[in-house]
Each structure stands twice: as C-alpha cells, then as structure tokens.
Figure 1: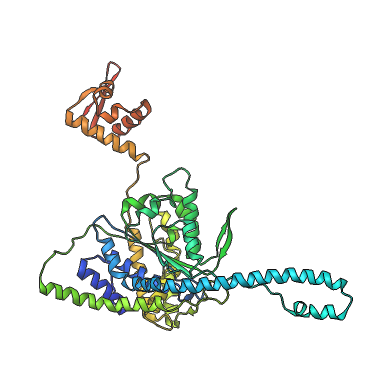
Figure 2: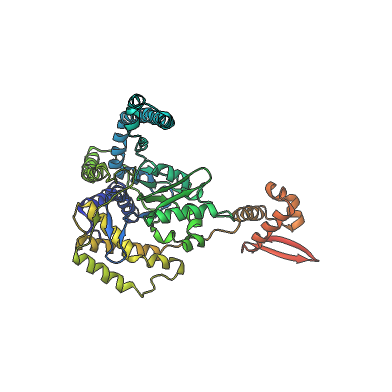
Length: 483
C-alpha cells in the first residue's frame, strides 16, 4: 500500500514499527490510525457537504494470529495518550478536593434555600394575620429576599479515555463524567466473547443491545438509558474503537448475520494478516544505537498525539460534558475528488459476499472521516486535496482487505467436533475394528461416560470424517480406520 501521501509523522510511525518489530502494514496502520483517531475524535466534526455534519470517530479492527506482537505494537504507540492520562491522574486528587468543597457549598446553600422556602410559607400565613406596619417591617427582609434554588454541581470530570471491558452500562457510566472514550485493546477476545457479546447463545439480545449502542455512538446520536432505576440522555459524546484480535475470538461475531443486518459490522474498518517473521534479537551497541534513533524519531509522533489530546475539550457551557465541536470542511478540490471517487463506485458491486454490501455503501462517509483525521493530525485548517488522496488510498486498502477476509466456519457444536476427533484418533492409534457397542465399552474414558444422546452426536460427527469406515455385518454396525 502507498503511504507517501500520509502525514509525515504518520509515515514515520508506520516505518518505525516496521523497523523495530517487522510489523506488517495491516497491523501498524490500524494502531497508528487508531491512536490518531482517539486524539482527534473529540476535537472536530466534519461537513459532508451532502448529508450534514458528521462525527469523525472510526472503528478499527486488526485480525492477527497469536504471537504477532499485538501488545508490543500497541504499547509503542500509546505513549502520548498514556502521558496525558498520567498527568490527569496526578491532578485528580486536587480536583477532587476542590469538587468536594463545591459540593459542600452547594449542600449549605440547598439547606438555606429549604429554610427560606419554609420561612416564606410561614411569612405568607402570618402576613394575612398582620394588623400593624411594625409587624410587616420586621418581616421585610424575608419577603424581599429572592428564593432561587442553587444549581447542583456537575460531577468531577474523569479521564478514562481508554477502556477494554465494554458493556452498555460501563460505557454509559464513563460517558456520564467525560465527553469521549476509546474502546481499545491489544487482546480484544474478552470484549467480543464476554458479557456484552453473547453471540454464541440462542438469545443474542444482549449482544444486539451492545452493537446497537455502538452503532448509535458511531453515528453521533444521543445515548439513551431508560430503566426502572435510571433514566438519562447523553448528548454529543464520542466513542472510537481499536481492537487487535485473533481470528478465533472474532469469527463468531463477524459470521453472525444479525450484526450485519443491524449495521454495526458495516461500520468497521478491518485488516488481517498472517504470521510474520519477527526480527532477530542481537545484542550489540550498534543495534542499540539504531533502535534509540528510531524511537527518537517516533517521539515526534508521541508529542503530536499528546498535544492533541492535552488540548482542553470544547464543552458546551452548563451542560456537563456535552461537546460543542468546531467543523472542519473540505477544500473545493478535496470535495470534487471525493465525489468522483464515490461516483466511480456508486453502481459497482465491490464484494462477492452480500453481507459486506453495507460496508461498500458507506464509501463516501468512511473516506471523509479518514481524511478529516489526517487533516486534524496535520493541524490543517481544512481537508486538503492531499489529505483526500491519502484517505482514498487508505479506503481502497480497506476494500481489498475486506475482499480477502475469509473466516473459518464455526461448527454448530464445536464440543462434539472436538470429542469426535479424540475418538477418531483413539480408533486409529489402537487399530480398533469392532462394533459401536464394543467402542462404548472399550473406547476412550470420556466417550464411555457419555450418555446415549451425546454418543449419537459424536458418532454422527465421526461419520462425516473421511478417516473412518462404518460398515454393517448382520445388522450390526462396525467401525475402523479407512484404508
């Protein structure tokens, strides 16, 4: 993939990950773009010129095998984000003490308001009975004093800008006290196979709830929560996603039709890579010096990310943590370029698999969001033609990645498949040639302990294998290794 049109610091970061860890572009790009998006998503909205003002949040997933240095790459690029979070952690104690004082003052004023309200009620009652000017004069202060209830302070702003354990309630709780968050993890299996995404169950309502709210957040919609215990609305929050994950941990999710129908999968930018060779470990002063030079060059990327996220959020007054974002626009050349790109693909069927068509339909907005991130990262006042060229090249890359994304099929009952493989291996190893009744009596310990229904299901799986031969003699079924 061509990276020459990307911002220079972005190119440097991708090159550094390749030089340090031999990281393929399919992984390094996702980490670099994900960190940039986390720093940028709560700084601007983007004008589409066609369908209104849009957020710039991205949902990025990189599928890679175990041992592919996912955590290492992630940690290399999170330096600027982590520096800001650490500064906020250190300052949090002082902010907490100030907030406690503010709450104490509020409680005092609230108590005084309640007392004044009660006194006003007494005053009104006595005023009707008052017969002399002297009595009214004594109550004059109470009568004329305005009785306005104090405003409860907003909660203390938090700094949980990165979280990996996503649940609906968990995300909402975070966004109650801050304007944005990134769902980030270098080992995201827990997210897609945990409490929130129960896609393996016959009842996936909880998973649909989670994907629905993530879809709504990507669209920049109001976040609603309405239960018997709590009712709230959160406006103008931002959520992005960066997950590095093994195929086995996400294939069930991507193969579940409900998530495509609901729209969440179409809002994902996915890459995938095979196992790659890691660099040799060499202990030498020369290599150490080279490594230090590479990391020093990477420092410019960290500094830019830190400057972006450290810049205060633009919060709408008297709303708590609701963002009031400026709008970045496209230059005329960039706008024309994006329109031409969209029109060229508008009536083209990009994917053989219909389940990816929803992704193809978002070609304009996905490309626009990427271009906006590149422009903001470069501190441009608008999306330039070069930003748009780079974004188009990136989206072309994502299209090719989606075209070549092949996920292994998950067996309907993976437990039966595993058990059948174990019994098959035992038959071959023991050179067994006998009846199914003999297999029940002499076979592997686990198989002997199975009930009738389990044994039937395992036999059915074994019969679908090309390793065994099942044959009948005098109405009795035998099994042996196929020759």
